[in-house]
Image 1 (cartoon, helix red, strand yellow):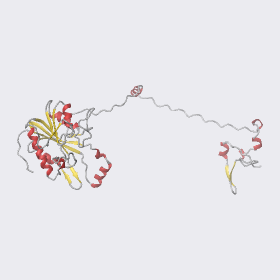
Image 2 (spheres, rainbow, N blue to C red):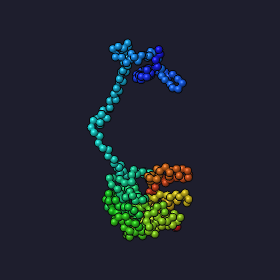
Image 3 (cartoon, rainbow, N blue to C red):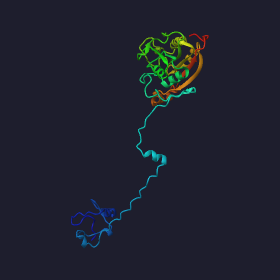
Image 4 (cartoon, one colour):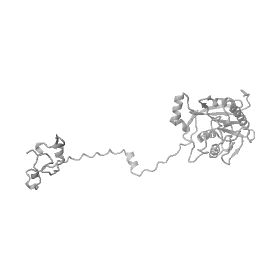
Length: 326
């Protein structure tokens, strides 16, 4: 008799895993069964008897030896010493202030130290690293510094850190230290200021104030340039001989209107009264420069995003003949 695995007299057998692995399928008319090779045939009447009456005994499967455990290589002495004690929490700190010595500046963050200068929430805030470098290089302690577009007061805070006196004016004062005044008509005595630092509106690029006098409402079609000529005239008036004017400005580009080179235009206007010291390029870290949609639009539209600001530096030496009249 050739028994079929798992069927005899209506009984169910429970073959081992080794038995199933050796079985081969056989086809029947309405079903499929599995047939074991001859070496695994057995009689269920014998298999159900106690083990001592069995003719053969199952051979236990050999257990494979365990894999050897790999030990990690020893750490170098300097790392072993560092890991012998619990690691201290990493403290993030801003880079130290360093006076710049080239005409290419890149500030690491908007503010220095462990607190803000001005407010990071103010639109168009000037990087305090830039103001610090200008004030540190061109003034002495107790010098008088004026900012006619003071915004959130970054220049005032930097001057306090450097032991300089500060005057801040704006058409929309944001704090008590900033006085209400138009940059074209300042309530300041003639030849009384050591340094004028200004970060004016870049034409109508941003909205700063609802005041109708705001220069940020003027388009760069000649109206903005004429207003800034009056601002530069007033800056020259309040500067003492030997004083320094610093203008932080950026060009403006509109896809419909084209490029407006405000840096070149303000540089030309300031030469009517002041002698140029130098021109510095400051790398911009505007958030929009890293956004994919802005970069894609510039690539597909064949134009460039503004990647730097001008820092135009002038000194008041003596009267100069006007170069042009707008």
